[in-house]
Image (cartoon, rainbow, N blue to C red; front, top):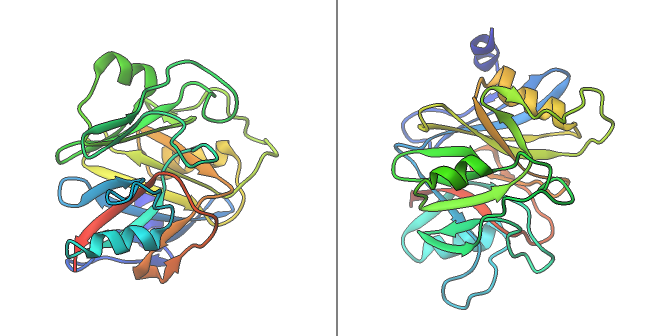
Length: 245
């Protein structure tokens, strides 16, 4: 049934020229835009600061301008984790192999501290969502990494503190990964949903064993093939798929 729903999605982008596949789907009375990325074939990166002046990039347009200097372009992007008022990452952050913020393993206030939280880790030919304390024990090698929380799906189960009829609803975005780390699913809700509904999208609809919440309310998507470029206040970490011009 899940594959039938994927087939009848409202919008489908595919084919050899596409950098990734994006679609808008209806699930459980809500609408979501989902982008599927092959981590073995596509270039997934995280962006925070301009390497020339050290200033926070903050927007999809500035990331694209940065890539243009090396003959690349941004094929897809979304905000990728929580950040302080000055847009520094709240948790662990790695860019091009360089650790810029340390891993946080303790609980705390807000959604980030609602343990278990996790890390989105991009390595060579694969990308994984890893629960934070497992990440701390195993120490996977990440070319890019961003920590956020809470986890949406942990080993095929929803976060234990999600409430099905919760009235805390926002536009939300997050990421899920396949068991082999080759397939990455990025999703954003088109309307306000609670954590239980958003986690269910990843577990029941996409069937991923691990999924991580990026943020809510400020959630934004850049998908030029869908004529989508969400505007708003400057962001902190941004995840993107990079392609050649």
